[in-house]
Amino acid sequence: MKTRRYIGITLLTAILVITLLPHSAAAALTSNWCSTPPTIDGIIGAGEWDAAYPNSFYVCDYFSGTPMILVAMWTMNDANNLYFRFQWLDSTHDEYEDGFYLYFDEDNNGNWSCNGVENVVSFLMNTTFSTFQDGYATSSGFLFQGIDPISQDGNGSYSYNIATTTYTVELVVPISCVNAEDIQPGAGAIIGISFLLIEGYAIEYYPYPANFTNFGVVTLQLASPPSAIGTLYSLLWIICIVSVFGYLHLRHRRPSISI
Image 1 (cartoon, rainbow, N blue to C red):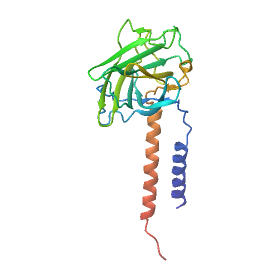
Image 2: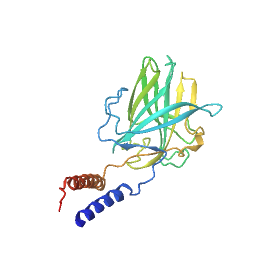
Image 3: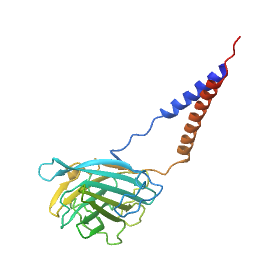
């Protein structure tokens, strides 16, 4: 009787210890590990973004800095690519260009420089077409300075739901290219990001935060590959749960002894 009780207490203690183990603090925005890449077609297939981490942020009015449009962002990565899914409301669906610029401050130092680690991708669209461009920024400012002269790495696609007035965009951005103009952060790295939304080619909404000099304040932490320790952790947790329920079940079924 005492032995079984001790076993039960030990197993329960193990579960509590495993559950309450300290975890590393998450960055402001987070990417989860991607085992199965999504299809970049602008359509959210069943289950293809289930592994992604859901983030959201506001873009702000150009003049007042007031938060104006909430952008939902799902992010995941593997060893070679960073995958983005963006959704936001736009009742106009302009015949002129809508779209955005997604900026990367790879060294996360809070400013732009010509050190080969300041990358930007753009995705522009209207009622008839869309264009993905891979480019770079320089120390002369935050603007899109040029098209990557070596190769156009990455891809994007979108859909627009008229009933809900919602844009849905899917992007893939390589993170393992050897070109100097491309980001090469590696799994687990923390990088600075920013997002500039455009409506009708002329109306611009600054990224979050609104001040472009604060690159690196908003960070994105890429996921690392699942480790053997993490797999063992999950397996041990499952074994403990099953063992405790098994013990409690047997204890409940034990016949009482009357004298």
